Every structure is written in structure tokens, then in C-alpha cells.
Image (cartoon, rainbow, N blue to C red):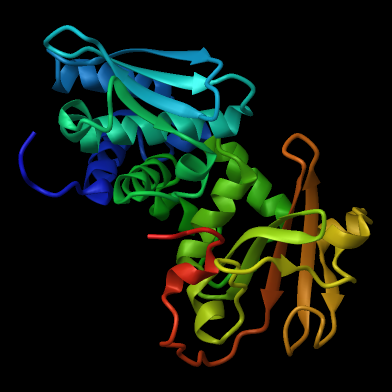
Length: 299
């Protein structure tokens, strides 16, 4: 490994171009990226002395994934996923650990704090929280599994998707609904937010850039954010109407009307709320970094 800083977007783009060439530009019509097979075959081709040998599932206390290496030299590598993850979350976990292999294996092998490998918890993998290498591995995973050129083709930047549209996108890419909403929020030109909550309080939230710049965002870094009493995540009325979108008046979420969509995940004991706002000219807020829209996204 050289001293060149990791380039997660470049490395993911390189693999995307390779897959487009080999499988065709419409490859997602046949299914998501087979990231488990890709990690094993690509590492064997490019790093035959130190490849990834296998991806296995194990009980990992406090972790959702790990990239581990052998005691012997040259190092042999493996990816471990915690049991019980949904298929979508498992795919993203594998891609995240594959990102660590592509970008950070020299650092992990030589760093004293990574004895035997790197072990990543829920926040590291599915929220990108932690050291820079966790955000870089998340960037790599998102760009590999959900390339922008394909996302934009199906959900243009000015479109206001509902859960049905976003759920179809999650199925196309073999990822969780949360992961695909986060990806969409990266490029949308609309004002929108996602709020992940439980028992009436936001665990974390993310706003699109347009929403943030207009002042429509939720910051939970230093305080617990209590959801509006009328919000579906609080009332628990998870009807088809709530999933499709309910107009909320000015003063409910923000000082303007919004359309609120909400679904519940019993598996993870949380609600996902998607908030759409009308477009307007953004007002820049320079006093806070953009990362403040993430709960617990602490550099």
C-alpha cells in the first residue's frame, strides 16, 4: 500500500465501469451487485497473494461486520457478517468491509489498534459514524451498490418519490430502504428529510442539501428531538394513507406545510419518516456544519 490517500469514489467507479463493461449497462435488470462474489473474485485477481478467501456469518457481539486477516504472512483476509441482518443490510455490510479491504487494508494490518482486523458496529456501517475510514468505506459501498447514473435514471433529481418508488429501488440494488433513501438524499434537488425514530424521539435524521440550506433540518447531535405529537411515528396509525403521504400544516414539523410519509420496521423497532417540503430559494446557514443533520455524526 502506498501513501496515497484512499479514494473511495474512484475505486467504486472503477469497479462500476468494469461491471458495466462485463455485464452490460442494464445489468441491474438482472439483479443487484453480487458483492460477496465480487469481493472474492476481484481480490483474487488483483491481489493474488493476499486475497479475500470467504465471507461468513457469525455471532458478533456489538458488531455487524468485520474484516479480519490471518496471523501468517502473506496476510489472508476474510469478511465476517453478524447473523440476523436482513439481506439488504447484509449486502451493504459486505460492501462496507470490502471497502475497508480496498482502501485500508495496509493501515488495518499495520495499525496497533486493529489487532487481527477491524470490527464495525451498526453506527459505523449503516450511518458512517466514526473515524474517517468508516465514512470512506460507506462511500465506497453506496457508490458500488447504487451508482448515481442508474439512480438518477430511475428517480430524477427533481422527483418526489414515495416509499413504493424507493422500495423498488432498494429491491433493485439489494439494499435496505434506509440505505436507498440516504443515497437519494445525496443527489436530490428537492427539499426533503428522513427521520429514523423510536418511541417518539428521533434517533437520527438527514436532510437533503436543498432542505438544509433553507433551514429545514433536524439536529440531534447534542439533544434529543421529540417528534410532533401528530406525527404518525407518535400516533402509531400506520395506515396506507400514512405510507402514501399525509399533509401536515404549518407548525407541525416546520414553519410551513409538509407532506409526511411514514412506515414502521418491526424487525428493527423503529419508524422511518420521509418529509417532503415545497421548493423555494435556499437560505444558507453558515453557523453549523452540514453534518449536523445526522444524529451522532461526530467527526
